Length: 143
Image (tube, rainbow, N blue to C red; front, side, top):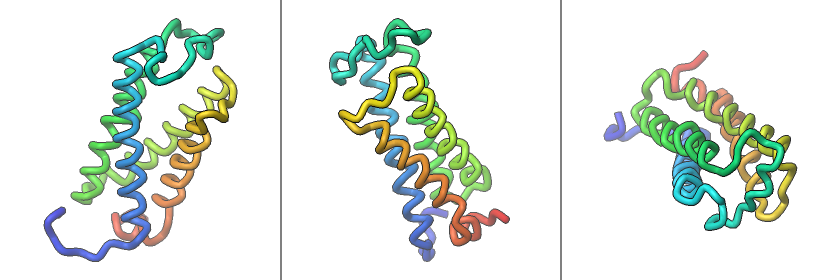
């Protein structure tokens, strides 16, 4: 349980940090896009959506909030409690984040400023690699 004093490998701690960072930033970004679907308040031009199925950032904001925001925070809590499903859910989130970034780049192109696509690509890759480390798998009882 969370209250037990237990040594955790550095990889496990790194996974906690990555999943929590993703969850909190996903919530913040999702709320920002839902609150202002024009993207103006987040300095995201609406023109980036030209050629996409979206007329504004409302739907991407909802997806971001739920799939890459709220869900990762729940998974973080599951990881802390060492619930068996949480490690597998971490893989899902890492893959979902990488797919999100790939689709985003396909739709709006690579945007170097701000370097959010680069940052979140690295977060997704680090999350995936960290979750697959032998010490992390062992900690969560995954073979």
